[in-house]
Length: 317
Image (cartoon, rainbow, N blue to C red):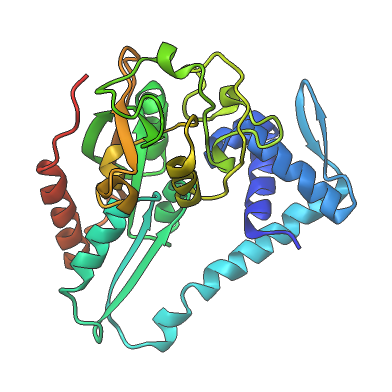
């Protein structure tokens, strides 16, 4: 059965008439989008589009699929408001977050102070690429995202075009994430040259799962020139980190601020080592509908996040 994301992907292609433009619009890698659409066509047993150097044209079946997709997504959106129709009014705080032990713990600590009888709380961890749309469509009141310095300008423009506001919380360097058995685990910092001989692990949505190539990593394509083979493809970040604790050679790239309460980091089974000489950094922050007056509950949560990150000191490289 097609997933909701398949309908969203096809609507993106129908809107842009291009796989690459749709990937940018949807915030996923082009190889991942292409593979997902290919798998969809194989599952349905029908061609949905024709591809050429001039772009993408939907087939009649593709046009019908997009028509169904619009109807299905509209119905899904209506179901999200059922609680507003059939439950008494209550304060609501809906948060969409990147995968982060830190953010999850901060949310859990904050909600302990709330009255469960008068407050509705929602928290979901989803890929970074999906969060902006959630906030714009009012499925979430707040998005917790990160920007990469190399694409910061274009993403900020996209955020503004969506009539959203981005408020930074933390800026930090890129970190190589390695297990305690890794030869580089005790290094205070590492260079790209030191990392080139080791396989890079990424999540499926961030890379090309067919080629398993570090070059296909959506976030860091400019950092790695070697074509290291990944031994395993991961669908989730936490399985990846668990595997790193067992590996003596593999590494990943991430943000230490998002994993301050990660049990593997606390137990020192994982090390976050600053990568020097790249000039690249990440910015973690909050996205919200800035043209609307936030609820008092949202203001309180945002203030608690700001206080926490004001006290966090990232590594300097």
